[in-house]
Length: 139
Image (tube, rainbow, N blue to C red; front, side, top):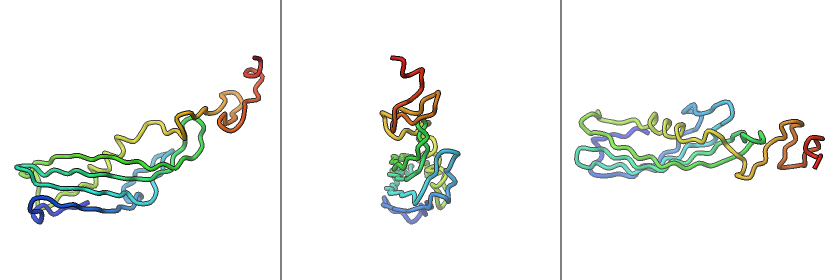
């Protein structure tokens, strides 16, 4: 999201959709799909350029417990203050927003809070069926 600072009198609301693949956010277990939607309010306040944005992304990830693919929509609040004296005629927020998404993405993705995961012995998905291991059935 490139913003021409000189063209902003006081404040402006901007929206942009960026294809997720353009920002190279994917990892081994997480794949961002569709567009990254950015809805921002940019303001000149005193000596600062203030950006308040809501970011929405969709991703497919592998559940850390049961290894099932999960589709999720994530929302982030992006808040940054930039010193106007240090900025040129325009600012490119892409790298800052990309960093915000990556730093705030959960380390472990779960299909649900109650995911039971896989049996460590037989590998059965405990969300879908009961384990048949002899160790677990001696009760």
